[in-house]
Image 1 (spheres, one colour):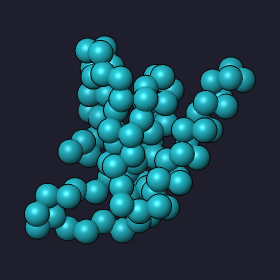
Image 2 (cartoon, one colour; image 1 turned 120 degrees about the horizontal axis):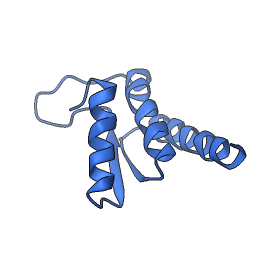
Image 3 (cartoon, helix red, strand yellow; image 1 turned 135 degrees about the vertical axis):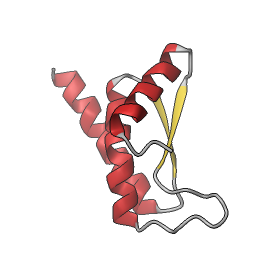
Length: 87
């Protein structure tokens, strides 16, 4: 839905400000007839959103059918948590 990273960040921030406890992040459309997305492209879409939301302290849900995407998202969230603990 959000192909512009800034629009996605603004939407996530607004959701948190409105009281959302969890931000659901996905990088592939599941609507009927949507084009398939390759795993590396899905990771490229999801990872910046995961890192941004983790930096805001959001609970994150990863919406993916691919283990590689979920593993990359977890690694990104961990990196951000480590940066926050050090900084």
